[in-house]
Image (cartoon, rainbow, N blue to C red; front, top):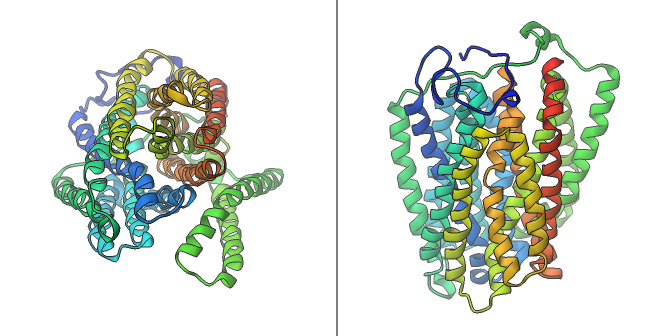
Length: 493
């Protein structure tokens, strides 16, 4: 277990105190473990990069509109929403290594499913494969992201997670380039989806190799420090007061109401797609809403010491907004390019997405890892988000300038996910795995943004749809501005 330190990450740049970036306070060097874990970042980066070319592919091969194609992202990110807490529980029961092995097995199963899915040729079969893969990626992200923050000095956690996410950016680059080569090279009609089996077969084989490597490797089960002044005994006894319970009830009602507003239309699309009885839709929808509300109330009230830390709870919301913005831009990048430059082919657009868009994304993480090691992470987050507010506003103007601005957003989005993650779980101690699960759960923002942006694009134009990420970036910038004040209060509580 890492020896606690009292200095906050905000009090100094994320330097490598204690003998190095990957060295713990007791002198252990965990670079090899870190390198092994970063291979997982490469894997889910590639899988996510593949997803971002499937929207346009299914629009053409299955003759669906942009809103319906947004279910590709919905299947992916709803899996994060549903699997995040179970993944955290698996990590607590089986440790980091056990959780990683379970995640890899799920990804392999989903990848190999694409072979029969191509033969079935139905949209639901492809969505099922993506959903299973995403449940596996949820396990990996829930475990690997916080794990990188404890593989060395706590104050350099944001730097380590940004380095790992840089490798993740390499996967994002390869995904649309390699995937586009096979997917858009498929035939017409019944053979239009034939190109999907090869890249997913390759993913399955690669994951099977990783399974063997992790099974025989030593992955220590480290723990994060708790910077709260509450003792372990006090945390176990800490319960919300009557007034706080009322506040929790109202706050969760608002959150569930907002989620319902966005998720209900997505559930409706899935219901029609699966040819479910229309009469059962309304009771099912409201039953799920009530069940989600009750489960959330129990979770918050039983873990009040964690949820009362505002830098964490607002971090969940901020990550929700970031993934919504990122997914919207990534998902409809190809559509935006084709709308603003009709002379570009689909294959060229997917190549631009990988080479230019994700190239800038990875370069941004390389630069960001250095910048965050020199400056306070929350300041960097606020500045990058503010710049993206301006860039997305330019995107709404369209044309070649809009395309340049859209690619510019990739660079400035690059450090946001790992930085928000590191800021959100800072100082949670024994709550880190559960807290990480909830921040990963907030990735459901990606399930909401894609169909919502697609709806706007179908009604108006793709460029108008960029109002969604613009609003998200405004709120992300505000979190970066107020984080220091929130974290100071939480640490003193």
